[in-house]
Image (cartoon, rainbow over all chains, first blue to last red; front, side, top):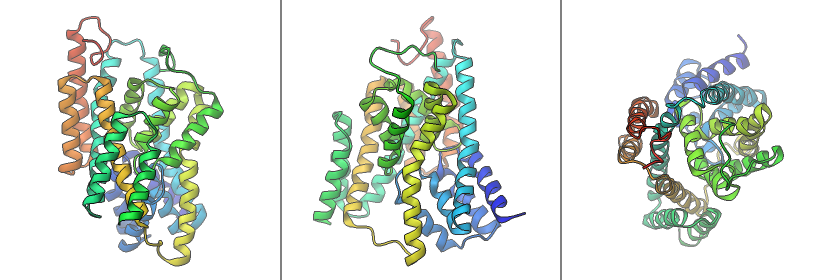
Length: 173
Length: 198
């Protein structure tokens, strides 16, 4: 089986088990890419993960970076497609299902039940990011708190706090 | 979902708008894409209400894949069918992919990334605050029931403190939370939405 096909299959399988996004599937990704296929060594795997974090957007794109390292441009294309397409197809199907069931009296409450889980996981992501920021000093926690208050209590663009955080970091760190 | 009645304060985006809205979300979504998506879709462009966005994100959360990516497919489909789903998906991934290709080229050339500047640490801290503030804001606006707040707290505890695997958290809490919401809806009689009606 060609390398590209193997890449496609590996990441397509990862895509279908990635409930919760990239961080949820990272251990399995490590197993596939490092232990099972030996495409990358441990150190490179960690470095590429850090590299993917440096870009904006959904961090599932860590798959793209791995694909690049393993098989260049075509590897990136194949890994990205493999990681995105199956999950996107499922989301498409789910949207259709919800549309078809829209009159059902239990649908709205069922959807409402998922809301607190989603918000709780957003809050958890923020706390995890704040813990990482804290490792760079107490000042960082003040920036976290000020930014949280700003976004919570005002409707202004969060760009203001991101810019402010960047300036404070450059001046004070 | 497409038939959800458009509340007066929301409006339907055109195809081009949909793409550029998601392009912005992808470009600015350092660390907290869900927070940026909410800002652009709910506050800035008013394509969705707070509740609609939260419900779509909730669905996106229980499906495999990134919750905002799944939400982009569903929101795109809702407004413009297959074209919309493709446009929103292309929009959210286009900028990050271009930046990643640039970073990969740098990495190939120098073997490592340049040291992250202190400014980036400050931005990362502000992004953490943005994500936390967004969670508070959504919670406040949605007027969650006590049991929903408990589920929210448990999800946060499980993921941020106990570091449990996310699939486990979702697979345990989602059914419990759905059961609570259904029970609340049944008690409320004809009321269609348990969390909204009091």
